[in-house]
Picture 1 (cartoon, helix red, strand yellow):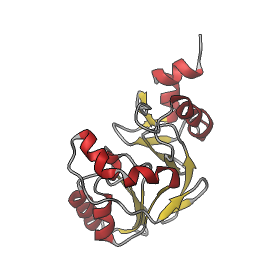
Picture 2 (cartoon, rainbow, N blue to C red):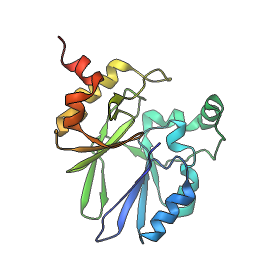
Picture 3 (cartoon, one colour):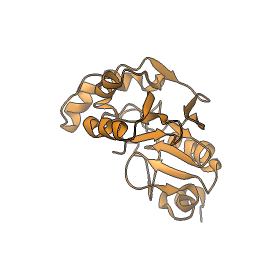
Length: 200
């Protein structure tokens, strides 16, 4: 799972996306670069993205936010951990409720929240001018799984078609798993997009 530390090189201010594990490594990176982290953003509530988010929140003393439709997943962190054979960390407490159109800033860089359900009911992405943090909606060569509770393949495809692909082919995507890509590359080569959006 990919965690992202998003910060502006000039102001050194920013936020963290999906701190699911390796909290000591994340804190070390923040300290090494002299960053001021102002928020923790959870793209969704699956265990691999939130397992140790509360530890980072406690260490940094900053607010944490998630979409309200994924709050039930946060409340089920212990059972999610058992399901996947993972050690349960402390249950994340997210006081913020993400909504479509919310904005987060890393210095002068602005990121807009888009609600992109399908992988989970409350999944969101953060889209900026040149990059987007897309969680588990779209991967290099793949899309998010929809066989977990709350997943819906048709809803995910609608999120891709209506929210993510219109962001433009030049936009670089940073997914929740695997390497980065661009929307244009995925539009051209991702077999899931080819099959769904280019019939025949």
